[in-house]
Length: 362
Picture 1 (tube, one colour):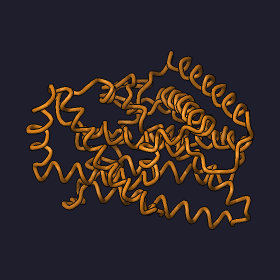
Picture 2 (cartoon, one colour):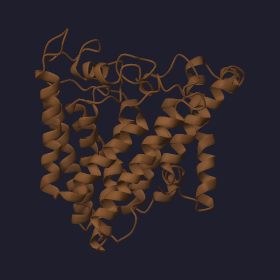
Picture 3 (cartoon, helix red, strand yellow):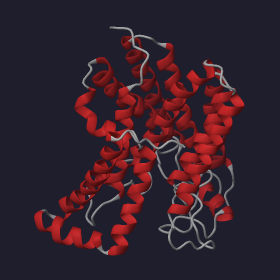
Picture 4 (cartoon, one colour):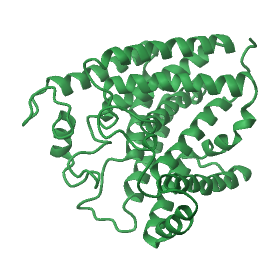
């Protein structure tokens, strides 16, 4: 196969865009019932929906390596890069922290964790690790983070349930959230948070897996080598995840170690597919829809939340779902149709920004 040209990977933009489109879809059902793949697993296990967030974090890691490593090679000061990483993390955190409860902010009950907040924390910590360690150090961090998490979840004698309990009602992650975040957790749970403190530890390793994939792409210069090693490492991660799942289940809410390994392996497989289609076969233009979504990923995610809030409070959600979606489809298909309509509306916004070459930079 040909040597890879030094250019932006179209496949990464497509994968990012497909992930954002999936986020919008699964976050905006019209109503009940919902197709099972478009819902999170209730507790243990995983569905299509449970792949979306870890895929985005993995993509963050790949993009970090490809962009920041070039800046380091050009001689940019690491302290300057660290400041930029910190500033970007703070902005993303504040976007999630403040935009969620707007316009009625109640500081006594405002949710502190969240999707954007977790992205910010994982991006910042993984960024520091990336700037001040080599590949070997990054591998050791992945091992260390997951080892610490595993020991906390299985060995600490959690009050009320002892060591090793991973039930929804009693586990170490929930216990820590109850100590630190009482009154500031997800309103649908109130007593534990899916983006809580302890589960963020292995989530950081998801970004680091992406960083290592970025190193792989920079090291190997030919398409064949890249694809071979992507699939080889994906297979290793998937096998490791399956073995570890004997002792610890896949669980997105807890972001268990087997789950982190599984999602990193699946991300590598899917990225290899996108890479082969877009960058090897040159067919990326077929997926311009997703590529456009990927050019303003964080902005589109924020706008999707704002649109959902507006539609709910204005009554637009109820009116459109009942008078349009349910009028032309069965309840389960109407629910999916409402989500797809959100995807289309936000794609039009993304397309308008892409057309004008307006890309949000922090």
